[in-house]
Length: 187
Image 1 (cartoon, rainbow, N blue to C red):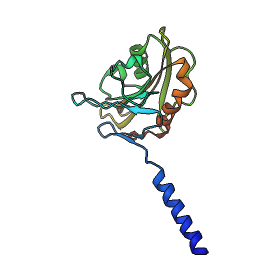
Image 2 (spheres, rainbow, N blue to C red; image 1 turned 30 degrees about the horizontal axis):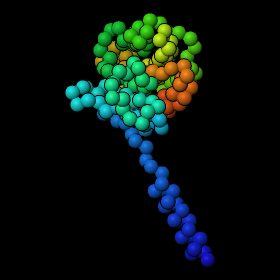
Image 3 (cartoon, rainbow, N blue to C red; image 1 turned 90 degrees about the vertical axis):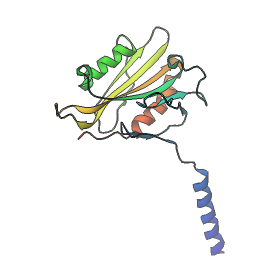
């Protein structure tokens, strides 16, 4: 009787282990990005002839779009680049630059809690006239610059591009990325 109970327990634990798929992990070694791909986000492969500055995920679709107009579909993107421009050396200046690129100015309130653990972050929300919304979280990480020891070497822009109707649902995978992303420590 005890042997049967033990065998049932071993079988149950084995089945649970087999049934639980391992999450897909996104990695970019050049910029030190690593995190599990959240449920509901589908990675668009980086074309072979394009330098991989970070991932782009579609939301709400199980496959990559045929026409890749990222401004007309819901996406989460991460763009990383080396911190080599005077205009974006400080975190606040990076946010000012990103807001000017994605819109004219930040508008409305920012959803709370949009940060990456142990890294300084700035966040903004931009409401566009055509109904699209951008939520942007900027941070900086990596080794400190030898010319300016207060400046990390890599800029990161995490962007959620969505609509008002999908904002609450799309914030879930965006927050999952923010909570689970591993970036190189500032050192």
